Amino acid sequence: MLILRVDPLRPDPEKIRAAAEAIRAGGLVAFPTETVYGLGADAFNGEASAKIFKVKGRPADNPLIVHVRGVDQAQEIGDIPAGVLEVMERVWPGPITFVVKKKANLPDVVTAGLPTVALRCPAHPTALKLIELSGTAIAAPSANKAGRPSPTRAEHVVEDLGEAVDVVLDAGPTFFGVESTIIDVTRGRPVLLRPGPFTAEEIKAIFGDVEIPAFARGLGEAEVALAPGMKYRHYAPDTPLLLAEDLGEAAAYLRSRGLRVAVLCALDKCADGDAVLRLGSEPYEVAKNLYDALRTVDRLGVDVAIGPVLEERGIGLAVMNRLRKAAGFRVAKDIKDLEKYASELARRVLR
Ligand code: AMP
Ligand code: MG
Image 1 (cartoon, rainbow, N blue to C red):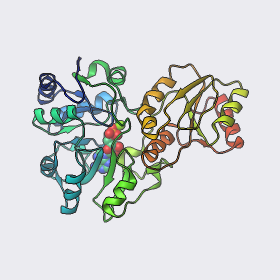
Image 2 (image 1 turned 90 degrees about the vertical axis):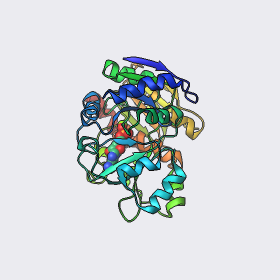
Image 3 (image 1 turned 135 degrees about the horizontal axis):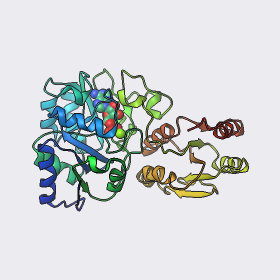
Image 4 (image 1 turned 135 degrees about the vertical axis):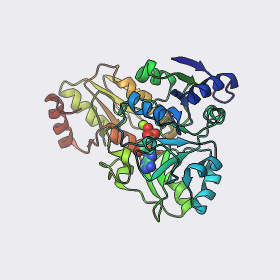
């Protein structure tokens, strides 16, 4: 594995060229985007793209996002209605992915055999330069082992994937820290498949309307047909995580049961614990630090981690979606819920 450090805003073209060569040769390149690190391969090379699934341990029915340098390249891959093209022109490059009907020229492995393709143009100089110099589109999911928190630093990529990656472009921590917003525009009304940095409020302002299914809020499993990737366990630390309406009550109760507790604090919600991780005092700071904190939890030697319930507005919708999924949808609303979870923990059935 070759690790190349680059300045995120002024990446050295020679280093990007080396990474682009690896893409062209059918290799795997981990690269920064404004959201998280991606694990990229030539989207038109089926064998190269298949390696992504193998290395991540990703189920074959969970399709990849295809990264393009702009609207022109997007049109070569997807069948994009005029109204959607106009929107893409306005919002790209940016942290929003559009699911559109695909044209027949992509290998099936990339789209998991679906008639649709997810397209995105990342707002990160390093990622854009890599796509440009590769001379192709880049299929890339997040560069983590399937089910683990997404990587927001090159170190996370190395930790999860190690030698399986040919080149890692290390541009330091990513800007937003949560994955791109995904909307499906193949149905009459746009459907939010995954909330992200491009907010539901912004989508509503542009399209006039957006459907937000319960799973996009992190309330339960997704309908498989609509959002193939959303049915899997995701973002989770190995340490059991649960969310609590009242962090103070939860920390005190769980510790009274003899459990060692790590508390994830965010905004003004915090409590004393055996360990305390502060995500930030501002919503974007919380998003940016979330995945690193979920990875850190596993190094603290605690029995359980507890996290807050935050307002689902702006970037907060994305944060709560990730937290709810990482917690396996467990939210303690009162002491009864806490008693139940503590008993499950004692019987080691909760993870
Ligand atoms: P990741 O960036 O690692 O989260 O992976 C890409 C995400 O995009 C997954 O959640 C996929 O399910 C989703 N995705 C990719 N292609 C499609 C598609 N054609 N329809 C719906 N979701 C998709
Ligand atoms: Mg992922």
